[in-house]
Picture 1 (tube, one colour):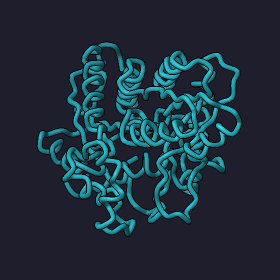
Picture 2 (cartoon, helix red, strand yellow):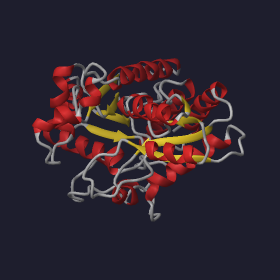
Picture 3 (cartoon, one colour):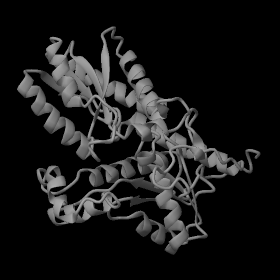
Length: 351
């Protein structure tokens, strides 16, 4: 393509962007219905879901994730507009309104032809990557078979995400100098972790987190040890999940004489429920009981470096599409064959 042929909009051929996320309730009356969607297929009876969702009720029955997604959309729209791109940004959730189905139907009704999808999960795994690709494939088949949806791959190893987390950790350490750094992410079943991304025995989910922790910690110029731990375990008690749990690890650190910690939630891009409940509430209570002083680093949120990186990835994917490229995954991710559905590996998914 010559300079005279170059598109005036660097997101061409895409005529819309779709932000896809987990979703969350807006009010108490929605909590049980939301959790019924989240736990579908797990066998948890509806009568137990009010207990399962107790942490939502502690915050007025309202998840912070929706407002955070709106803020990210606004920041990304502003960043892209500054580059001369005016492609509209839409939003759909896997588990609550606006559902992916609603977003797809809206895109088709508005005449969109080719859409670029961005998910709010930075790491490869079935739950954080392929499940969204499956939901999109199902929705397209039902509602808009002529709509083309491509995606950008996982982005945890991108400099913009790393820089945002490094800056957040630096600020937390200024608040609590000399604290032990404990990186935290969402636990998943060990077999799901092993099947994620690249073919290492532990899978890309763990190895990517280890690399992010290493690089974010190294950016502080610290020689001290640090840890990678997990939160938000759920599911059957007999099913192995990634460990150690953050609360168990805090107890072990106290026994080692540690009395100051910074929790750095590198597994999450914003301060949604797993952060404000599992860390700001539960882990903080554990620290108080143990006599540990705790600070918590911020998530990437709408940090300028993070938003700019997402814009870069969208533009890069558009350039691939103009050249006929079909490689949305980041280097080191397993591509379309990774993160298989543990219940039915034959389930269709977009690329």
